[in-house]
Structure formats: structure tokens, C-alpha cells
Length: 213
Image (cartoon, rainbow, N blue to C red; front, side, top):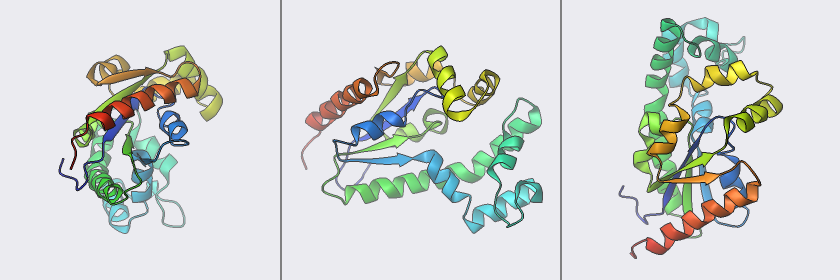
């Protein structure tokens, strides 16, 4: 990377329901972090007219609502699933969105480097490893939570069935592979503050090792 001030960029990954978004948010209560949510960036891009035009061209009018906006539930119904058509449609959607998301991630990292009060950037991206966005990071942290706990969380917080969790996770790298490809692992199966403190230790190590200038 060649950002002007060289802020540490920490990538966060984990299985669905691991709380990978909650951990940096908790830490941000006491540390000056810029949290970039790749999923949120992707959702915002769905409002971009160029993206709308590309999606209409590829998927037709059925994934749009009556106001001419992209219907995320309808689009999800097209791209999530095991069939060859689902997989091809998901690949097509990723080819539209992922380069634009990466460009926006880089823009926001550069913007964070202009803020002297910011200590680090956290890149929260479910598909960080699958997309190669980990190349934008100085280190990648895996948020480790046993599957039964994650399953309980998505049932309670998202209203998903266990089958829905399995279906969604098939669209990502296996959890064990994610963990093996990360530089650090922190436990978020218990108190959220304990996981935030573990992330803070990693942050402090990065800051202490950063080269001046």
C-alpha cells in the first residue's frame, strides 16, 4: 500500500453470526477507529444509476421494485442458492460490484489517512479473503465463535433458520479455511468486551511496530 500516512488497516473476518462487526464497534467506543463496512458500501452502490443500469441489463426488471430501485430480497433470491444458475448469477453480480467496492474502500482508506486523530482503519468484509481485499490490509483478524453459538445468534437476531445459515455459508470460504488464512484469532464466544480487548492488543502491537514517517 502507498497511503500518505500509512495508517494500519486491520481486516476482520469470521463466520456468519460471529459478531465480527460488533467487536470493532465496541473497541471504537474508546479508540479512534475508522470502520469501513464493505457490505454497507455494496448496498449503497445499489443506488448508483450506473450499477442499476448494469444490473437491469444482466438480470432484467424482476429484481427492481415499483419505484425503480433494486429490490435486495429479489436480488438475493436470484444469487443465493446451489444451482448452476444461482452460481453464475452470483458471479455476474460480483463482477459488477466488487471492483467498485474495492475502489471505494481505497478511497475511504486514503480519506482516513487525512484525519490526524484516526489511529487505524478497520475493514469489515464478509468476503475479504474471497475477493482479495485482504491485500489492502496490514493484518487480518479472525473472530472465532463456535457454530452452535453463531447459529443461535442468527436465529435470535436475524430470524434465520439453521438451514438458511448453512445456505449462506456455502457462498463463503469454509470457516476453518478463513481461520487458517488469518494472522490472528480472537474469541468472541463470551463477553464482547473481552473480544474488543483482544483486538485492542493487536492494534497496539501494530501501532508500536509502525515505522515513523
